[in-house]
Image (cartoon, rainbow, N blue to C red; front, top):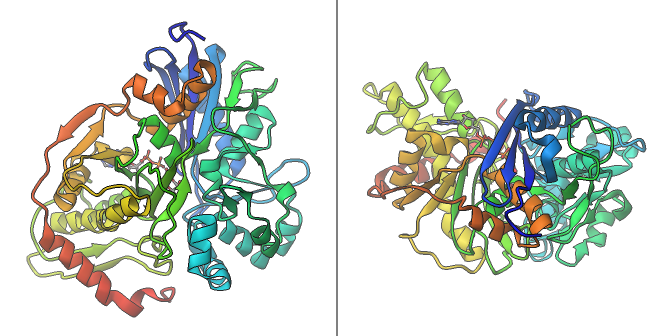
Length: 478
Ligand SMILES: Nc1ncnc2c1ncn2[C@@H]1O[C@H](COP(=O)(O)OP(=O)(O)O)[C@@H](O)[C@H]1O
Ligand SMILES: O=C(CO)[C@@H](O)[C@H](O)COP(=O)(O)O
């Protein structure tokens, strides 16, 4: 196809809190229409969502773009790792277990003990934590054996939505690499046997650049039957596509999860488990560290203090480790929030700033490890691309500048996950690579914020508090 023929694609981001859709002009990258619809996530110890709610939200978000009928191709980026279990009719057996549900921590620990950290890192690229799909499936078998027995198919969130659109049992290498049972050579049959999972229950891994299928008749989304459906991918892989990332360029994403990652030429294999050795959606890798407590934890702290989320104040000695949901980086699934260093003159604004600092600290501490794991150079002068909902907030921007000492670029394009999905859909039409499409669209352009002097004192205070928190975080709080 000739680029420039007014074709439109739709990219979808089915994330933890909401679904966002963008309709994009393939030739120019102009966003023609946008839509958004919220989901619910259960509270208490569990983090679960009904996959059928994602599907309804997808329909609403796509309709709101007003371009559903014009779209020539569509693609779904989705929150990683979630365990979707389907029965023989393709209906969810139970709500999906999400990436931030830490009840599967004991099962993750047992899996790691069984094979050893080095073997996991070499085979799966990652040492699985509670977030990984393998740990969630092990949790289900142990805690709800009847639900596991009724499961005929296991899917990731984006696979479920791709199947509702196209009928295809399809996934991609990027999202599959977050299961724990994917290797570059295919599914790890030995591991699947240990998990009591038949490879026939899993989707086919679609080659990069190929379609998963076509939109079925009667989806109720407004998309025309026959519209091409790309393979989709995990949300972080989609954002990497959406930014058109060249290898070695670091990204910090501030959303429900905090993530730090880079596309790399080398395959990561970090036995410490800090860096997940994901595949990207093309032919490279995506070493990534992820926190469970990011924008929601900071917003909750602001609400507890009765402050606006921007009402931070400098100074003071307070440290907040905002591990409200347990934590993944550092690996402390049983942790809860901790405040240390309060004085009579500590202000609410300082305490709020300490929550921002505590949330950003773990991500920035992992940044160099991410680059090293993928064999890329560390250059402290290289700009950090800041994306996700939090990147719009000045307090987040200044916190990242102060704690990283790096220049920070804020891409003007919002919704980079949905844009990456759109680029993947567009690539089906133009024959380009999806990252080339995004570069042609100029999606990473945006304001450059100069670095601030690195606040080593704050970083040391947080590291010291974390180091000394010891047994407080070893077991669930009673
Ligand atoms: N201007 C802002 N300042 C700080 N945080 C913001 C701002 N706008 C949105 N957010 C935060 O962004 C989060 C949503 O980010 P997003 O990347 O869309 O989430 P998700 O990871 O679910 O896709 C919300 O939790 C909200 O707290
Ligand atoms: O688990 C991870 C990465 O490994 C998370 O980044 C999820 O992919 C959820 O993403 P958001 O809903 O925050 O976008």
